[in-house]
Length: 288
Image (cartoon, rainbow, N blue to C red):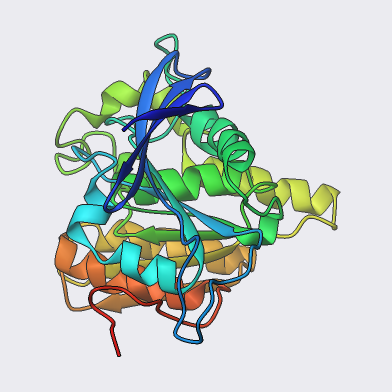
């Protein structure tokens, strides 16, 4: 049955918790799934010790919602085995940026509010190096944009098949805006020069580090299928990061813009992140 916690409605489901959060940034109720690897029963005969959990904020793509990752991949199994909390919010078709329409501050929601609320609700680490953001397609765009803009909050960024075509292709290129994505950005020429553009967030971070050498760049992972139409713009952004001296892992592989590719590479992302060794607890699929 649903229960209230910190004024938030929580529903316990087989694939974790479904949370309905009244967001201050968006002035609406936002749905999200949360994977909590708590009370894992181990073969050695006891539960895992209580700890502050590392957290991955995992973003869906265009036309998706908060259920995508848990229904289309094995993220729950892999996250629980590595003691990782995964927070998967619905982002509409927002590209996870603040919009001109009032009460649509999706960037603020992802970059600050969601972190603050989930840390109050759950036993999460408040360390930057234990806080990660990732996503696919539109969510890859959102992970790069918000991970770079809110670099104080995220130590690691992972972007799969990122929809960087919005700003990396010419304005009149037919493949740049195929489903009306421009509605998220207002005047596209103005948005190109603003921090709605991940490249501008990157340039702002580079400049900030020049002025304050104590700033540490987040580590970044990017992957894209060789048959994906977005491969070109991902390669361009890879070049920006390499020129700036980021700690970058970049991978290309056979595949296109689909869940076969993302299911494979989200597992690779979990191997790249600084997580606990794999230790699957006792469950219906793991009985010895």
